[in-house]
Structures are given as structure tokens and as C-alpha cells.
Image (cartoon, rainbow, N blue to C red; front, side):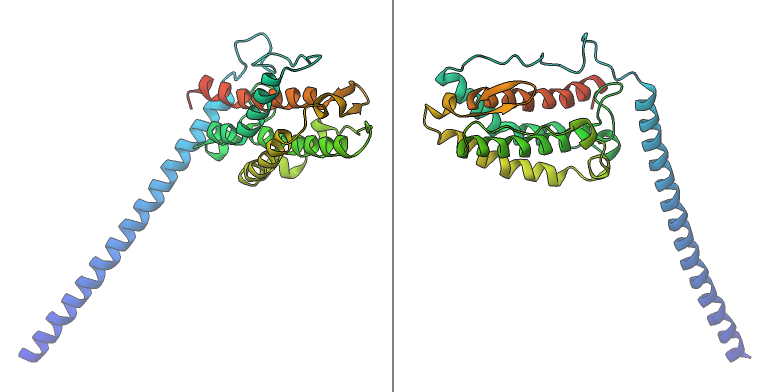
Length: 233
């Protein structure tokens, strides 16, 4: 009888331990599911709040937060240095502008009807790769005729819409380091004696091109910063 009693008690204790363990596991599992569900709801709520808000800037034309580019007839030595420095610093400024943003924030247009921040980053990488190629042509050929690309259509390609921005940020870091190094190595006559012919804009000297892309980088960085400031990100 004592052996039977001890067996029943041991069996009962084992059953209690097993039941308690499974109960804890089930409780933890349900807590984890509930936590994830609440987090997803919060993120969805944030996304919906962005969709419901007017992201249009208060300025008359949100496309040009720093103003339109005005091509100078020539640049002074100080202005060339400033343009080169702006080109050198762009990758750091772009990375700082998007630092800490979530994926849904990167998929937010900088203005109503405009590109998303993701498209903007990829566009800058695509555009500046083209720019460096044109400069190298200008330095090795006699006023070559360049072929423009359809930037609006490029911005709608699947990789521009969906791919992570990190590869483009890394690409810009290497590209701009070489670009700035090339500009700093140019002899003074090359800035005005070398250039290319754009089918719509005509002749563009290397110093005018440097001024254009220094502006272009600040222009798109301002798109990102202006949206973040407006949305409180």
C-alpha cells in the first residue's frame, strides 16, 4: 500500500510539473504573439497616419526646397573648391539624413506626387554615376555629345522602388571619393576648356557641371530633411 501511495504521489507530482511547464510555455507564447500583434498595429497606425497627412511643404514649390539651379557663366577658384567640397561631403550628409528611418518612412513621398525617400536615394546614385561618366568623357574627348537618360522612368524601375538603400549609399561613398579626387587634380585650364554638349542645355564646362551636381546633392538632401522635419521624425 505504501509503495502504491508513493507511486501515485510521484505520478501526481510529475503531472503537476509537466502541466506547470506547458502552461508557462503557452502563456509566454501567447504573450509573444500579443506583443507582436500590438507592435504591428502600432506600425500600421503610424503608416496610416502618414498616408492621411498632407506631406506637401508650406513653400510655394516643394520640388525646389533650396531653389532652382542657376547655371553660372563661370566660377571663381573659391567657388570651385566649394563645389568640390560639397560633392565630397554629400554621401555623409545623405546617410545622416536617412539615419534611423524605418522602411515605411523610406517609402513615404517627400511631397504629394513626388518620389519616396527610397527612390530619391537610388536616383542620386544613378544620376551621379552618369555624371562621373560624362566628366571622364569630357576629359578624354573633344567636347563629346552626351545622351540624356529618362530619370523619371529610371525612378520607376523595380529595384529603385523596392531595394534597400544601403547599397546606393555605399556606392555613393566610393563614387564621390573618386569624383572629388579627380576634380581636385584638375589643372586650372581644364575647368573651362573641357566639357560636354548636352542636347538640350548646350555646352557645359566642367566647372558648370561641378556647380550643377553640388546643387543636385544639396537639393535632394533637402527633400529628405524637409520631410523629416515636417513629420517630426
